[in-house]
Length: 373
Image 1: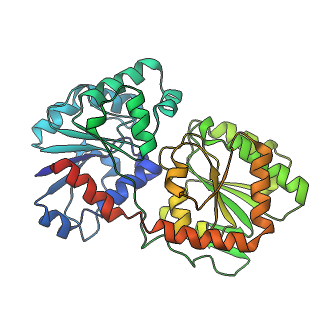
Image 2: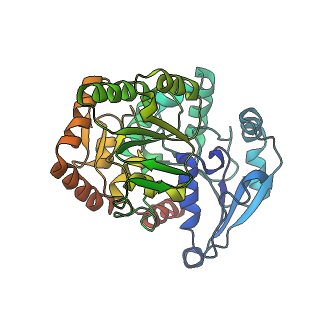
């Protein structure tokens, strides 16, 4: 079987979708593809020929598509040319990891759409016309991988037939994310930054209001005012549609000197950044997957997160949950972790155990099995 994987829309590896594709590719090893009689080919922008470059353990090829590196040009290509491209290249099946952004209008080859974002958040980024186009494509695609039960239920609520949806959770790269990387030094050397401890970490793209940076910054300011704690707030994530607003919120904050916005943070340095923090704080509303929550648990640090979306599904009883609309409650939970080192350590240990159920190798096997059914 020859499988094509669309790399468009994965933001050159600098987002959750990019991380998904990187891990998908890395786990399609020579051994796995031979065992399952698979040939795999990525297709996308020439700019990404080496972004998702397979290691020596892969035999994945790359098919460059000539299209401008803009959303408009790539969307037009998917709507008008992608179906024929997939047919012409003799793909037996096609995986669309960024289906929430790009899907063909019609399918000439059996395909699976991967959806990791709820329709409500997609709607905030698209107009109604584009959302209707996406829904029509999802009704026509053969199969859908939903990143959580929350996503599946959301798709069903929007009229997508349940029988074509399979919940397959993202994994964790346990060779990269594991406990004990933080050390006891005063600074964490997570290239390209040297960051002074203690600090809280929020890792996510600056993509919209649902990420709730505003209430987090307000809660952090309240915590500093009430306690005078030495903690800093590190916001690590690539720039997005909400970047200017987040930067302004941080700049105008009374404790702006204690807020660091790093921009995109290299994947290989994230484990060190997580491990050196006092806790991962994840206040996003309606999150579909919550990969940083999973990765933080694997690093053995306490997690404080919103009680909405898929986060309770992902974290189970491990994280400290809060209502992300309540600034006072967020501040109280942060203070609780500072004041109770034993609780923080207990949550860290529990997170490591919880993280063991998430494995990229299993995720990839489930996706391939779903395709081959």
